Structure formats: C-alpha cells, structure tokens
Length: 108
Image (tube, rainbow, N blue to C red):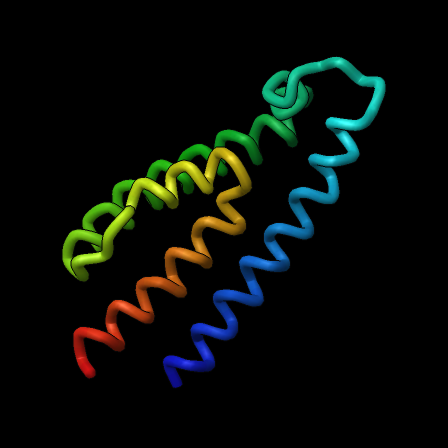
C-alpha cells in the first residue's frame, strides 16, 4: 500500500509542476511587466485564492517541520525553498513522498 501512495505523491508532484509552471512560463515570457504578487491580488477571486494559499503554506511549514523532526527527516528546509522556487503543488507531495519513505524505514 505504501508503494501506491509513493507513486501517487510523485505523480501529483509532476502534475503540480506542469500545471503551475505552464502558466508561470507564460507570465515570465509575456510583455506584461506587472509583478506576480500584484497579479495575485488583481481581483477578489484571485485575492481569495492567494490568501487561502498563504494559509495552506503556513500550516504546511509548521506541520512538516514537526513531522520531519518526529521522523528524523533531514533537510526540511528544502521543502521551504521548493515551495517558493517551484510551487507548493510540488513541495507538498514531495514531502509526503519522503515522509512515506521515512515511515517505511522506521517500521522496516
């Protein structure tokens, strides 16, 4: 069962990379010079989604820090960097994948 979860988490990370960076690349290569953050707050819908995402990211950081310590997972800070450099849609499933591996190691 753990193997199926690991495959799902890696697949989710790949999907997360594709569905976020497809649009990031479009923005970065467009003539539009507005900042990413100003576009994230461009209207009530995008503001709601942006604020929702900030809360999710904050909760992920706190929970993953404690979970990484509990499971003796090294390099927790990589998930923080990955969140801002790539996307939470990639960092979170990669963390879950690594968490499953740590759980398997500790019970194996």
